[in-house]
Amino acid sequence: MFILGNFLIALAKLIYIVSNAYIWIVIARAVISWVNADLYNPIVRFLVQITDPVLYKIRRYLPPMGGLDLSPMILILVIVFLQSFLVPTLQHLGLMLSPDMIRY
Image (cartoon, rainbow, N blue to C red; front, side, top):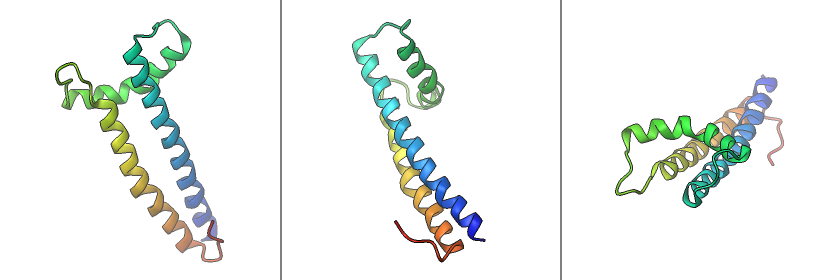
């Protein structure tokens, strides 16, 4: 069972790192939308392609209010909620399955 415990702990760390990186990508996308950057720039295209599918789903339920798009803020709040719920839960399950694991 310790293998499954180690897997869950590693998965929790991976989810935490990836979600933090995605938060920064969403912030960069929001800043780029404020300065009206060139859409032919490869970095801008990457940021738009990686964030727009998720932001469009939020925009369907929460349209822009008075020219203010709140979808990046909502997405960041959802990611932070999942980080504070999912990551500790997986770490706790992993520690329960591998009791000899040293806590970091």
